[in-house]
Amino acid sequence: MATPANPSLRDTLAHKIADVLRANGYEGTSMAQISKATGLLKGSLYHHFPKGKEDMARAAMQVLAQEAERLMIASLVAEGTPRQKLEAWAKGVEEFYLGGEKNCLLGTMVLSGGADRFQSELKDAFSAWITVVSGVLIEAGASEQQAPRRAQAAIERIQGALIVARALEDFSGFQQLTQDLPNVLLEEIDD
Amino acid sequence: MATPANPSLRDTLAHKIADVLRANGYEGTSMAQISKATGLLKGSLYHHFPKGKEDMARAAMQVLAQEAERLMIASLVAEGTPRQKLEAWAKGVEEFYLGGEKNCLLGTMVLSGGADRFQSELKDAFSAWITVVSGVLIEAGASEQQAPRRAQAAIERIQGALIVARALEDFSGFQQLTQDLPNVLLEEIDD
DNA sequence: GTCTATACTAGGATAGAC
DNA sequence: GTCTATCCTAGTATAGAC
Image: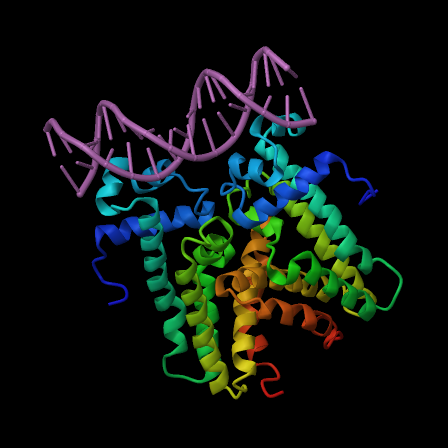
């Protein structure tokens, strides 16, 4: 199951680790911070993540992928009109990133020294995300050429909005974005 | 002058350091990497940047701000129609980020552990950038409410496109963006 | 202005007791 | 499964010769 009712301890830890990584980046996160965030001392962490920090980051990416699936992707592949799906998606985006206050772990990894280490995971995650959004746009009447471009543009905008919001210490731009997303994506769908 | 004909050694070093920081983030960049990139041994670097790594990062941000001024901002405040300015700007964006292959130091800082340390600089830099682009949009007939939002959206998109391009190992999306930017910004300017 | 040498800390990781 | 203790390296920074 994507989100089990009784999450394993490992998953619970991974979730806390994900929070630290989202806030500080891969190289910017130390074992000491992880220890503090999880309440486990260093030695104990290696019991759950034998390969150390890289292992933890991978687990963090996995649990967040599950949460993203639940909050954002699921609505895109559910029943409903394209507009309904995109509106549910936008709402999930808002929730997943806590109105812009939590960074995207993927984006953070790309810019914080994890790009080489996790290249294939990052590529796959973004590709998959673009593909699903693109599918809804095709369903809404976009051309096979237009749809993926438009989907990628939307995801780019989300990534950028998170950065700019954090820099400006003003999250209204991100919240504005999640409100506008469905309309922007469906606008002039046939050109 | 923004870009002196004979750049000081410190500026030359700062530029090389900026490249490393753009690629690896603040916490992801070590003195060893900086030493290799500049050709100076650690001890020598402290002669030019007494306060160490933080000093170097600040200097890197300054020289890149100058380069950004020259390549991107200058055209926005020069003579010409809004469209001409935005087209020159988009070309500068393409050049400044080397078609998407070089990250934005500002965005990188935000996500790689430099957000707290350089908060005020990051805020000022993004604010200034948004303001200048917004000015051109107002000149093009956008409302005082619409212009800054649209400008911020464009800058968000640039930031996000850099991340996604790097993750996908495909820079065509970024290049597409720089081509479309002027049209997107001027589209339906009066709503 | 650059070098060598060195100090010192923090970071990641391991072994083994409980 | 968590702890303590320890190892080792890499990290930042400093002092002082040249």
